[in-house]
Amino acid sequence: MRTVLVTGDFDVPAGAFSSEVKLIHLRKPVSEQHILDILPSVHGYIVGGPEYVSAHWLSCASELKHVVVMGTGTASFVDIEAATQKGINVSNTPGLNVLAVAEFTLAMMTVCTAGIFESIECVKDGSRWPQTVRPSVVDQSVGIIGMGNIGQEVAKALREKGCRNLYYWSRHRKYDAELSLGLNYTSIQEMVEAVDCLFIHIAGCEDTYGLVDRAVLEKSKYNLSIFNMSSPRIVCAESLKNHLRNKPEAFCFIDGYYNEGVDNIGALGDPYQLLTLPSRNLVVTSHLAGQKKDALRAMLLHAIAELKNSVDVVKNAR
Image (cartoon, rainbow, N blue to C red; front, side, top):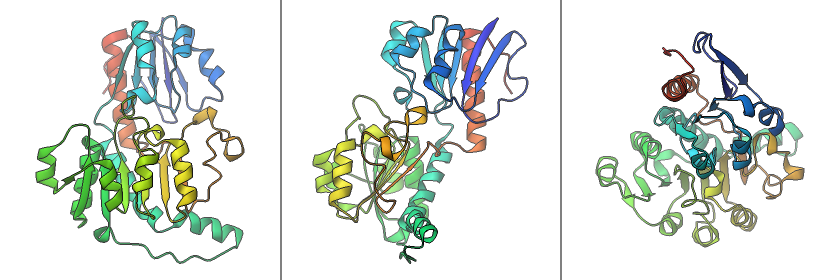
């Protein structure tokens, strides 16, 4: 009998797997060991949670043939080099969470520029009653790092809302997008000098980790708002900490963290010393951008189909 491990806090459709498959679904693994105890018998692994499948994990997975990451940014969730060395196939579910992440990005832009998280804290502790003046999207200058499917969807939505000051940087220049969306191509350093909001939608990998570092942040406007929907490691943690401490009007939203899931033990144990910052400067959420119900279902069904092709463990998913 083949064994498939699925992680993530969502439902697995009834009948998605054949009776010849043993399904282990961990909605909320309580520890790294919780997964490691299961991995030696697993043939297919669908990563729908926040865990990182490291070289050590893969060394324990003696039967594993295929890992599918629900989403993109595969390198943020799997040690691809280690998987390749072991002959384990690694794939993802491209393009299926684009609308979900774009929608979430724009929602967070509105929520954070309105100071909602700070307002919640102040109301609860009775310290202040803030009345933050929220800027209009039309009046914002926006920069986007990464102009793939998600970056283009965000730019399109901003244009439709009336935003005309749109800048971007990507590893590959997108001339068609520049024409259709009215984008201005520029360097990252020049962009942070000009924009009010910086969106990060570039894939996390060795080439992009630390892309936003001290040299970039020192050039930024004093009140730059950063919205990182990619790997946290795109932004150097030490540089970000110093930036937010030295520029009290600056802000950063991260959907995810440098240590997350079962590795996150909160502000008191944070080795990066960022979680102690007040919400007027930093807000961190637990990988919520792609957690839209229809997107999750589409990604899961795609992942199941991927396993069927390589591990022969599932029947047709519809």
